[in-house]
Image (cartoon, helix red, strand yellow):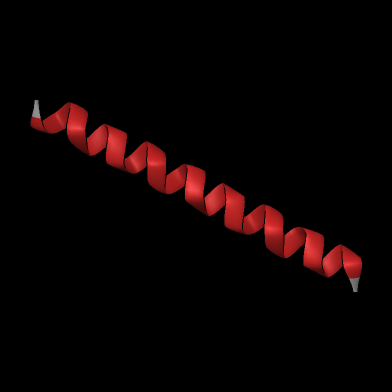
Length: 31
């Protein structure tokens, strides 16, 4: 149970990091 919860938390963190990286990339390209 605990391991799968940690994995889910990690996946959601990676998703957020990817989203933030995409936004930064778009802003840099916009400049």
